[in-house]
Length: 112
Image (cartoon, rainbow, N blue to C red; front, side, top):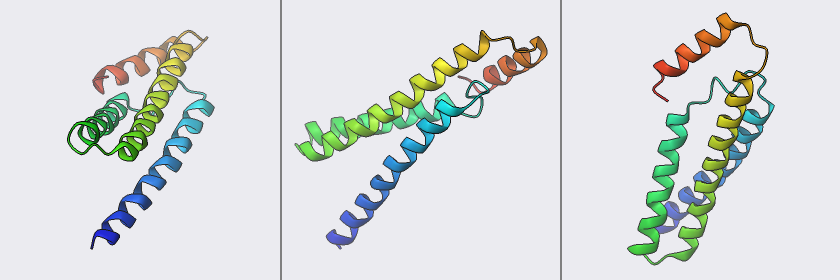
């Protein structure tokens, strides 16, 4: 059973790295200010991986797990920073005012 758990953990976390990269590339290529990227979700992922780092370090003394989750946390933070940068850059472009105001309204409603 331990081997199955380790295999599942390794597979899921390997896939999460792939998806982090895909999200970062998607945000970088986005031409509309990252409107589809919710910062609340990324904040939750930073908190989840950050708390795993803390638990692995303090309670488990498992440095490989610490390092693995530090890299996941950094990937989430990169995605968040890129999205914030894209949103700020988008808001200063020559976007029609009606679209900009509806985007701001949507953003406010999503509690970011």
